[in-house]
Length: 586
Image 1 (cartoon, rainbow, N blue to C red):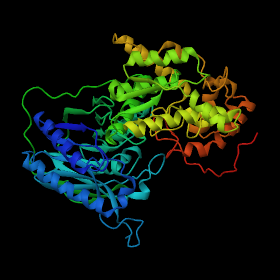
Image 2 (cartoon, helix red, strand yellow):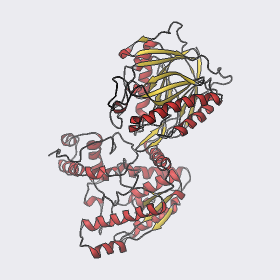
Image 3 (cartoon, rainbow, N blue to C red):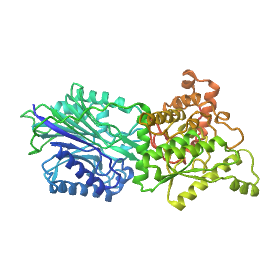
Image 4 (spheres, one colour):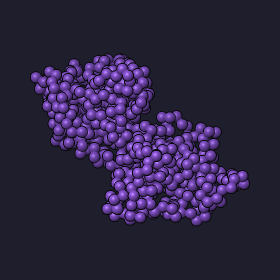
């Protein structure tokens, strides 16, 4: 049986950075060549970054993507890498955008993959299955492909597929079996969700069995606005054996020698197979000779614990949002509570303490222990710590306006927001807001106050998970003989906004271990009132919580973006009308 040395390049592209992404491809192809690779694969839409969203509709961007692909093929040859087949995702089009007046049926923008070799493109594949759920809107942007491209490389027939093609039975993978391929390359821009790695391996095994072929699955890493991609690239044989698996959330070159069946001599004509897909066959004339010496083994990285996985996702999502948007630093309010403590620790892990400013903004209601906890966290992490008392500013407002009750509480939050935005304007920091998903769900925040900010690292993190993350992060520091970043008193004390004397979150909200399961069922699971009550929740509490969630939609619509880690994050995942009289009545 022939052996191919595969190189899966799990890398971090940036949307719209055609020059930078092409440079990444050249750099990692060189690394793959130095490792003796005979076939290299990069993620979905690697050249443009993913997702490009409405950039698809700009014909100038489509033209730039196609031109960049031609330059890349020539540059790889000029680099002395022309004999190495390289699979690259990019944006293509064979007609005007579908939303334009001159659109042509069956033609338009394509989510495409090109196999580069010898200074040009020897094969092209257009994504067949287009996801249109959750964060995906690919039916809005792309036209589905109707062919399966099979390329003969080093005596092996290799099928080209893209991301969602793997997630649906039939289609390209059924066609791959009928075409008799030995290997299916599947390039991905598959966003992270907690426990998705537990789903992915069984899924790849099912498709490998369906195709009767080995699958090489490569996924990108990195943050793109709300999305974060974790990699988790792998190679799985037709019988389900996991040959190699890459780590999560880091760039990685996965190189592995794979034994594959030799292509049938007669399999050389284009045919029509499963789902009316046309099988188009191409041949790569020559590839680098098989390396001598020991076989390349990519190794199998075992998945980490949930808290470690989420922490890495949040760190990467924050780091890339800040760096890719070229912010020099971040600033956040440090209250001494658990949410701001976790966000501060995430920011320090993502950017380093010299790029994080924490501001304590005490009022007359701020407890001494909260002030001490904020200062303690700053000392533990080494961030730039400042104290800006707000009471004189609040008193000035109150001397000129007649306010009482909740209005005074909200005034304090808004004064803090003004201070953070002023520091942002003066010094160039990105303001991080610190509200967790539980608070956003029930509207437990002040517009233009504690909700102020350009990014929220914990927007998709339930309050109960916030505590678990804090406990895990401190324990992880202990395992490495480092200082725990989060004061234990911030973890253990009852949560409070401290906007009035003796105030606790539980004055207004159910306890979080009661609240979060209801919210998870309603928000993530789309359960109605009856389903929640049948699940064992108190009907009166359910009615109260659902009213809060439904009436807070206008607040959520104005909230900062934040890293998605759940199956249904607020934002593109969950799209409900603000003006909406439907209620889950008890």
